Every structure is written in structure tokens, then in C-alpha cells.
Length: 97
Image (cartoon, rainbow, N blue to C red; front, side, top):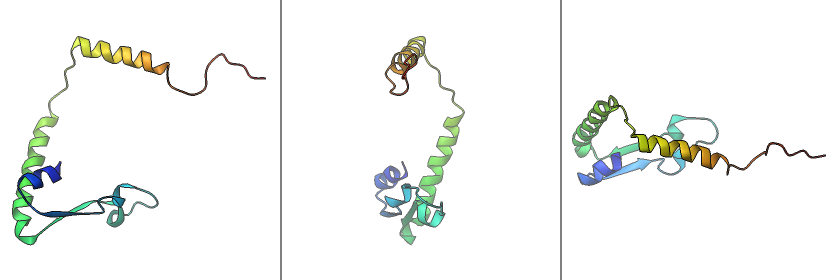
């Protein structure tokens, strides 16, 4: 999401640990695993403002509760019942000797 914001404002950036940082293997060391977005010093203030505006707007949206229609609830129940039949694994009632 932040990349999209920076791209839209034409701010050049570099993401440290872009690909390997998300693998999360071995010990969890922030320096190795955490992704860090780096921008040029002249873009720092503008980038900070863009990100803080985004974070403020996303905090406002957290108070909104999801409302599902009756049709959506029914679909979720049907999917849960239907797709549990197709989950591979141990089957009940099968006796091996």
C-alpha cells in the first residue's frame, strides 16, 4: 500500500529486504527480516507526511463494523458446509486391520 502511495506521488524509494525479508526463517532479527523503505533525504518530509496521512485515515476506518447481508451470511454457511466435505485427511468410519 505504501509503495502505491509513493509511486502515485512520484517519490523514488528502495525497499531493504524486499524479497528475502519476508521469508522468516531462522531467528527473528529485525535487521534481517524487517522490510525498510528508504527515500532520498530531500523526499523525507513529504514521504513522512504521506504515510502519516494514510495511517490517520486507516485508523478512522477501524471503527467501522462490517455488516453482512442475509444472502452473504447464507453463502458463508453453505460454503463452510460444502467445502468441509472436500478437505483431505483422515476419514471417519474407515477401519484398517
